[in-house]
Length: 67
Image (tube, rainbow, N blue to C red; front, side, top):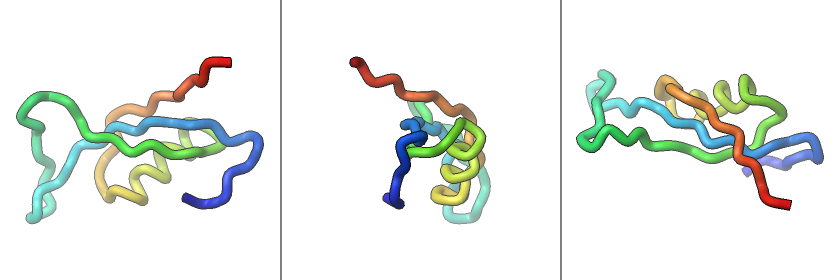
């Protein structure tokens, strides 16, 4: 993971997987895979998740840590 700054927050980004041919694949159980990463905001998290996975991002959720 790249260096994180104090303003970065944790996000979980759910994406639609692709098959070897490049077309989108529905999951058997309806649960989308996800990547978890740090970003300044949700838009940057979505862009980073797309860059990492190469797949369309369906949802971005900010992860709140208990204090």
